[in-house]
Length: 162
Image (cartoon, rainbow, N blue to C red; front, side, top):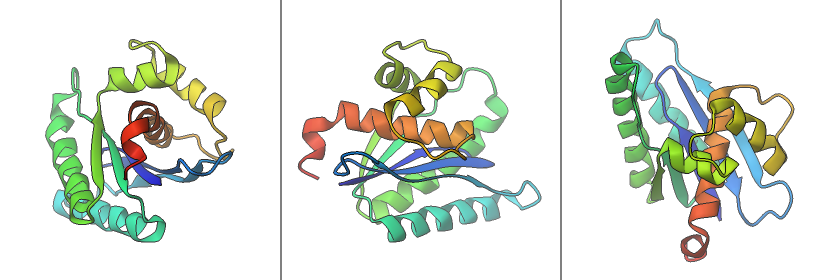
């Protein structure tokens, strides 16, 4: 069973595919998809939607694991990220993926064991938990992988029926 996990954004979108049935290399794919700030916002949303559709068609996941929005500082980008996240959830729903959502503290607990872990702690734990390709250096990409690992940890019994 494959999980599409997403760290939502509209400038950068972390995307990962995790296959829970692969005993060693469960990370099948990861990427940080970027949109150009020179494009109008609605075209950026369309580009994101097209990329999520492409990944779903290529990797055929059954589940979407996505971060719930949790804004405490940058309120200016909150609306844009919310709209981009809506596109992602819509595309997943349209493709009949089961959807799981996680808050940043839930992700931190699942990956580090500590709900107030720093971003650096989460980033350093991901490669310790699973094999990650050497060229993964984007926080967004590592966040997407962490979200997928959270789904595996939190939904073990439920995922066996998907």
